[in-house]
Length: 217
Ligand SMILES: [Fe+2]
Image (cartoon, rainbow, N blue to C red; front, side):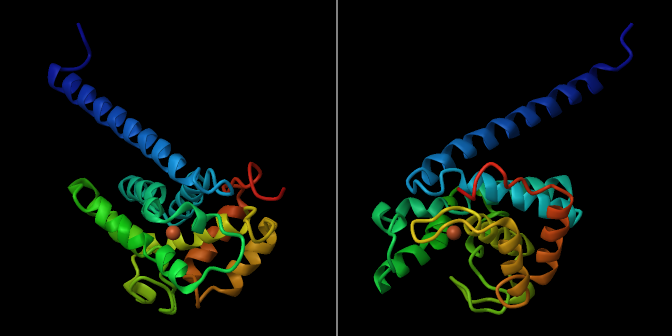
């Protein structure tokens, strides 16, 4: 005789199905963002790395499973709007002109336009929209500040900036993780939320920020 009722078995099966679907969705997002990141040969795995860092920060801040899942999706999709930015701008090794800067700065809003029809993503779209806001209000696209910026977006800002600083770029060599952490700490309170920087530093000290696979050439 089986130890569980048919109803319990059905619930377990359903839960496994949902889990499998979630995993397939995340795999699909990873493939999508690698296609987008590949347009810029210097940041091939950018979004996947940003996702790892964001999840480490979220775990440090005791995010629930649901909030970590939302953060994971937002991190993987944060730069999806770059699909609308010309490749030559993304790869440019000299200073951008005003129009090119405008084109780059439009990518969070383009992401919103692209993702809005997907109602299942409604909760994560604000995190993507605001991933270039600064804690002191000097960022874009809306120039909001402090707690006006969703916490998840403040996490993405730190994760994104650390990834960019520790990767080789057309215009400069990768920083060491220690130098990049120094930059995060210096800009805590202006560009970055100090609480998020602190959580990142603790996660780094615990070895939960994997940086050995990229960065310093
Ligand atoms: Fe971005």
